[in-house]
Image (tube, rainbow, N blue to C red):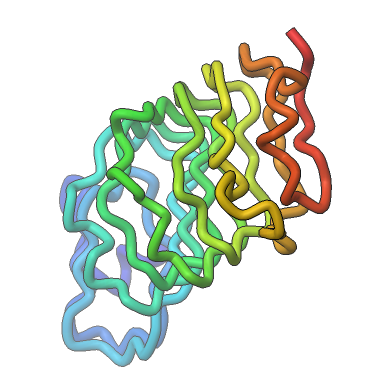
Length: 197
């Protein structure tokens, strides 16, 4: 690997301390720990760890990444997500083993900039709420979601409430019959896509 010519690679650990890096380089697939102290990296906005075999992410793994906007963890074996930075705009955790019990309570509530949330092809039992107002796309197809509440997307206490941003909700491939919950969609610009059971 070219990065291992610049840095030291030892059994899943990549040490790139004091290497004049200006951005995070492509890492070997077997990387489990990456060290890049004393470099010239000015910002980290995107972290893409797709197509690995990650089964566990340590609780503090993303906590200090306060400028992170895109977190891409597609096609791994992740069952639980750690606390995520509120700066995220795009979260993609498709094709994992993520369970509802593996999400923090109100995991996405404080993410005022979150626009894209892709959680399809996992093992989620319910839609993680509350969802931020900024959310535009929510993909939850092929999970185990069985019901929707009146307040999942809307505010049942405010009939004038409109959620303008949320235009793409995918629920197909779940055991929920979306036709049974018409009161859950009154605030949406478009109805969710799903399959009647």
